[in-house]
Length: 398
Image (cartoon, rainbow, N blue to C red):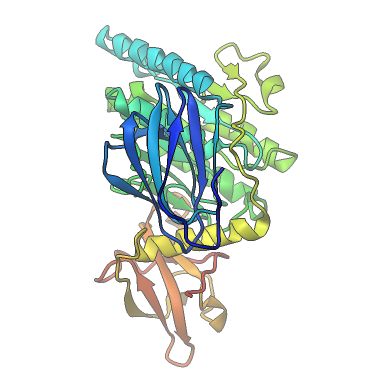
């Protein structure tokens, strides 16, 4: 294990044995990059390119895995780095093979003229407590499927972290190629519904309603696209798996018609449902628990990333907008400063729940006397709508 954190570290090489991995934790403010010197290796299902240096995003924890052996080089200061041959990757890739076969059966059923409901590919819902590696497993299953030519749909129900867009949203997006190590989940065609809080306990009925809206929209898309239907879904869930949290997980299984579950605390619920397979997968030893303070920092980082970009290469634009109280049932006040608002596609306030959002703005100033607020947005120009959705999400620019 190399020295980590604090003082500068010279570039160092690791020779990885077959089916082993190098685990690296990247600090928030020190650049780290990785280079494949020999052999083949991947990060969460995405292959490292030969020779070229690849930057590792700040605040990330990655595992560089090799099936057949590799030599990799690290450059920069990490918080920790070590090698391990205790990984569940063989089980994970076997799960991918099962899903791949079911996608092929769904495609064949379509070719034989089967109706949409009989040609549905796997809908996998990944469940488990916080810090059990759910998001990482999603990335691997999605990247492996995309590498095989499929375009699975990624559905993220984890409003606390937000791996597709900012926290506070439930969202979905098609994955057409292995997930980029630097840029992460592609944002070209996300479908997002704004809940506005980091926990579903604030308003579980609204959380359920938004899940239903997202599921119905995806069903409509699948009914007219046999390839997307055959590719299926990979559904990530929150880490709350007790009491109301467990009830909402049951709701998500029913709402998204999941036909594959990756097991944790839900086996009993599937006893009398022969169309559901329950598979228990081992948690990776490399998963690092995150405390509430770290999770709050991660949420703040995700919001900053939306406005400024992963590499801080976007230039958000500041704009004033007239009194939003005419459109939303929220009185304009100084409490809105530093909050994140969603821009809804709804045409009327009563359409908000059934409408996805165009994007987000961050309120930087409120002028109560003039009934105006100033905000930043990730791009210039007028907002596509003046109907805004308030939230409890805050972000303070450093």
